[in-house]
Length: 258
Image (tube, rainbow, N blue to C red):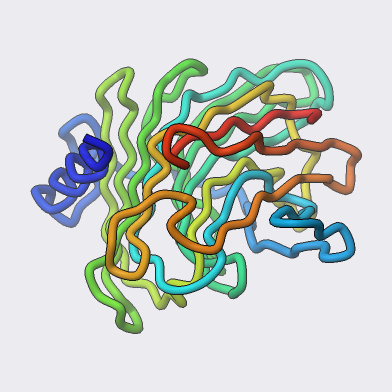
């Protein structure tokens, strides 16, 4: 049963065509893309045990060997309070920890200077900026994201699957991308906006569940490979940190202000 969600999502990917699908219909991506970078820059002077500190990432990463698929679920958090404006991204991805490549997808939870929140889903392949998708997202919605490839080749074909499990809306994107396959991540991020790391919005606590990975050819969890917990201390004074792994290393909570 542990692999049920991953296999269900992969079946949906294989059964879909190579166009983008939202709730069974053709989707067009939003016409504007917010530049959000997610390359990891570990601050090794803060390294202790299996935890590092980052200026923009908080969560867990499998940091070596070959990762060809990643899955995670979470409930979209409501953002509020200070800082305003503030930004937060919840995502899973492949690459980016030890490399310049990263394929990822997730949700954005932002709050503008007037205290008005906004929520949307997106996908991204570095070095390009994120691409928002036409899927209505609300705080409290349960999201599933799966990213997977079958081949360890340069310019492999990847499938990105996003499902709002609350509304039933789905999105599938097939892309060709040259990945290093060198890491897998489950991350809460202070995104880069207009070339700078943005203030991390107060997202409360986000719990990542069903954290699964295809690692060295086998289906596993965060503990299947060398893994690192990542604390966030952004340049604007906000912090966030993941809690311990639970549920067979498939679950953890990430908390703003921790």
